Length: 125
Image (cartoon, rainbow, N blue to C red; front, side):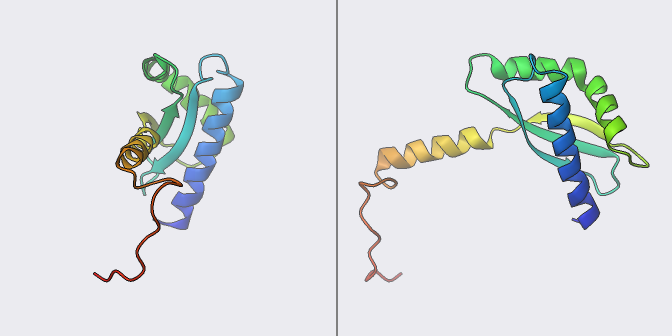
């Protein structure tokens, strides 16, 4: 990934978060922009977001982005000046939930936490 794409990703992430939490504060209160992945030609960008554990937050966020994608894109394009502004696609990122689930499984197995025995230093594979 080129340095330019990395910089565009970070800039888009910051500006999208800013728009969501200033203009759409009430609707986007449960949404966090996790990452942005822009195509090398800067024509498309996937915006990964996560939601809080509030019941229905996933559905509300999906419905919100379906209805407001174009307006968010328009507002962000005013702040981020590029020759070609990427088409935004909002995608739910469930990595945090998967990580939490893995930790719960490891806790159930007794492999993580203060009660877990220290690794055997004498054991060789």
